[in-house]
Image (cartoon, rainbow, N blue to C red; front, side, top):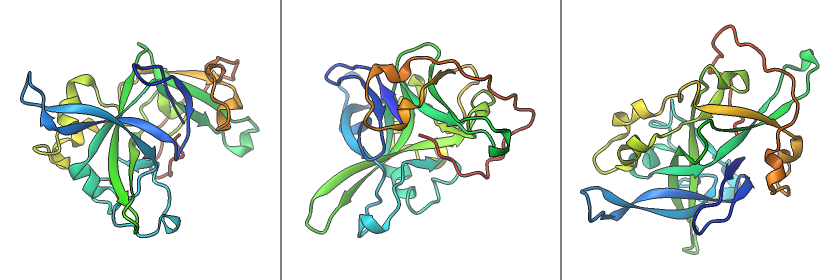
Length: 237
């Protein structure tokens, strides 16, 4: 799940769940008058990417996330990687630390946000799916990568963060091919995020208030002594 602080024209949202609308930023077809760069505009898309070639959504899994390591070549994402890269603004995201069952420890939810506060931009992909009756739905997914050392104590995957100085290059699908933006799809610095333990209220979509981000007492996170394998399938968000 994601959280997004109040922005101009958009109310604060504390528990954005899959299939709900998320705000994204795209490069428009118009050029900004003050530069040679395309203008950017915001729009709402359904969180859960649906490739344009899918005939029946009921027969296709919900694609909330795309693995950065394989998105360029994977059929579900390669067209979006080439033509429809987007930014997903958020105040942070929720993640669960789920210990091995043998440890007897309970799962713990965390609200993960930039230490400096404010908005972070996650790398995303967008596709417009058209039904047989001609109606269209804009859909999107968030790119993830292997967790950095700090995040790996909670989970082995994390969202790809795009820094402000790289917004233009990430959104430029005209001149920047996927292979030319691979360097942007790396784990962010270890000290970029802070993880705040929160209650299990975040596990219910019906809970949408600011109390979701209230800190709670939690057991210390484990110390990771060796790199976490990237073979495990993520359950981020």
